[in-house]
Amino acid sequence: MLDVQGTPLAGTHERPGQYVHLRLPGVGQGLFAIASPPGRPGTQWEFLLKVGSPLPDALIHLPRGAHVDVSRPEGRGFPLERARGQDVLLFATGSGISAIRSVITSIQLERGAYGQVTLYFGARTPGAFAYTDELHEWEAGGVRVVRTVSQPGASGWQGLTGYVQAHLAEEPVQAAVAFLCGQKEMVRGVMTTLQARGMPAGDIHLNF
Image 1 (spheres, rainbow, N blue to C red):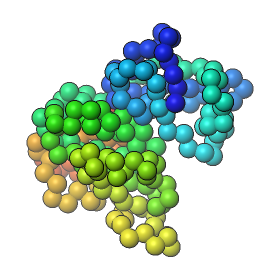
Image 2 (image 1 turned 180 degrees about the vertical axis):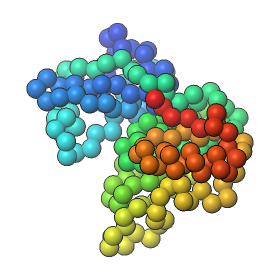
Image 3 (image 1 turned 90 degrees about the vertical axis):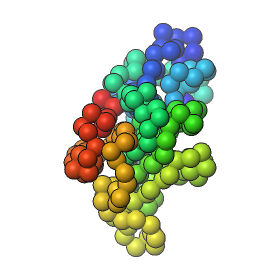
Image 4 (image 1 turned 45 degrees about the horizontal axis):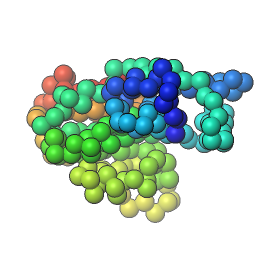
């Protein structure tokens, strides 16, 4: 969690799905989506950090109060105002869930302003899902979660397998708005599937 209170960055996170550059001298820099909702008091930004790369590993082990170089939020973000009063379809793979988490937490602050909300969440293996400790909270808050893995292996996974777009089934899309973040192949596949099912291109949104 990054506290930007009292800095020029306070109040600059305007839309879910925006991202920033984080940099540590001597380690490097990278792009990270802000995983917390915009516009709330406290000016604390949350990020998804996955172990295994120099920068995330260094950020994870920073002591409380350490300094991190951070840019202003970038990207268009997701136009959540376009989804008010409509069903919402969310699609995420891998670390793309961090940008979608910002959407989910924003929706839950005003859950009654939206229709049915469904998250299609894909990962390579069953152990690769982020925010597993929050999934039940999301479901309890009115978000249907559909998980699928592309490489179940011998893990004993009993859930869905294959790519995200393969599990849209009979999901009504004509009166819904879609927000996508993740691997390019998933984004292309979902966009193609949604448009073939009748969703206007203008109702399908990326965050950059």
